[in-house]
Amino acid sequence: MRRHLKLLDFALASLRRRPLKSWGLVVVYAFTVAVVASVLLLTRAIREEAAQILVAAPELTVQRVVGGRHEPIPLSYGDAIRGLPGVMGVEARFWGYTYDAVTDSTITVMGASEGLQGLEMIEGRLPTTATECAVGAGVAEMWGAGTGGEVILVDAESTGVPYEVVGVFRAPSEMLTNDLVTMTSVEAAVFLGLPDGTATDLAVRIANPNEVDTVAAKIKRAHPDSRPITRSEVLRTYDAVFHWRSGMMLAVFSGALVAFAILAWDKATGLSAEERREIGILKAIGWDTADVLELKVWEGLTISLTSLMLGLIAAMVHVFVLGAPLLVPVLRGWSVLFPELRPAPFVDPYMLFAIAFLTVVPYVAATVAPSWKAAITDPDEVVRG
Image (cartoon, rainbow, N blue to C red; front, side, top):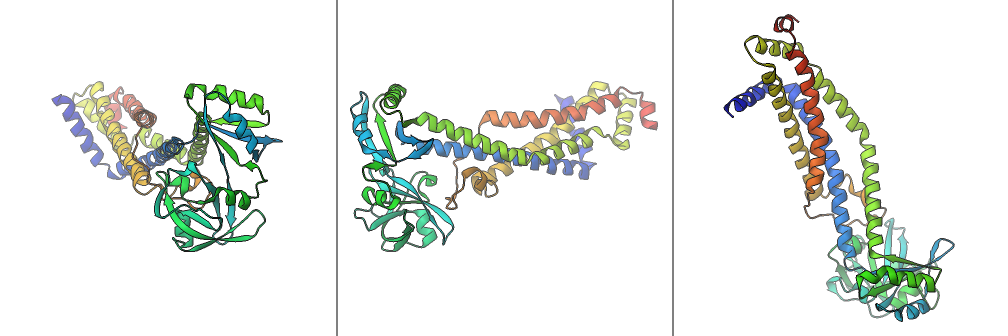
């Protein structure tokens, strides 16, 4: 152990004798690790946020599809679905989008119903009349419209409709409610231009989770134009979307990754005359080839692990403290009313192992290879160059 520690101490001293090369590698290396880790950490954080949102989602959502497009679904479908074995209840949902040209933002409009019981009222209450609405914290902040104020929304006929704000709310996940405006279900249907006797979709509660697929198959047989969507399918869709977006971002940064690989390989394999002379002198005074290789392994590990730790710390600060301001707009979607993301710190050990393996091992190998070639050469030839 004492021998290994002495070799480590010598390796650190050797790196200190070449500060520009050592710190230059550390900075570039750490930046590359920070970029990759930030994308992976943020993707995992948003996926966890999406999973939290869907915990309270219905086991089955039924839509109507005509010509491959989502159309309003007749309420009579819900009456038929209630009679299926295993179905605990069916709730008609009225929701859609409206665009606010003043703030250049898209607002989600939803009818207040039992499906919104998870909302935490910051102030006021949910609407009870056609002229009232409640807004999410993001909408309230953007419009400066608290309880007692008034907002104007553009309905399906492109007409501005005034509503009195009677409440401001939030939810455990602000991504769900930050751009949300709720009104009574009847008013939401009128505002969105839904035909009488129809809803946007149906939320189906099922007693036994193992029967979700069976109930979905029965609904599809009874109503061929319906599209039953299970909660697990929604989760898989979220995973696929975020994996695709994270892959797209990594592809954007691929140029930086390639540049790092070229720089690291050049710096690691291009032994300077001073380094070759140092190896020759060590061999001449009695060092074994194994000692020289262990010395270079320590140097490579020191650079790699230092860069890895600095890069991971920078990525965690960027994602978990600052809210990933450089990456969030790409991964979260098109809405401009983004809540301030503060994801709970979550680190996947497998992800850390993958990053470490893909960065530390190649660099250490690139460091040892040219050193081995110099170490097996005659010391006199190495010293004389």
